[in-house]
Length: 70
Image (cartoon, rainbow, N blue to C red):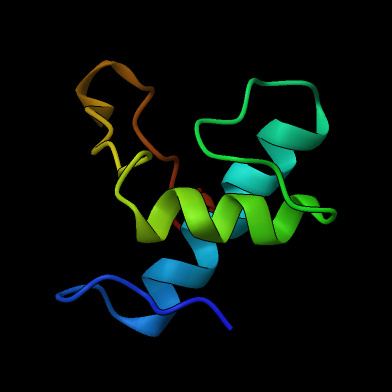
């Protein structure tokens, strides 16, 4: 079992790990020693703060359309 970093809730840890595991599965270079399973490698990267969350600036995205207003 991989211990999640202090200050990170379980949901954030699991979502970040899943996203990073998908990247590793597609061929991204691991930032820690590889485990047999991609998910475990991803969890170790998150736990060691080698991969961190990036807040997305959504100001350039299209505004959502309210379909109920039509």
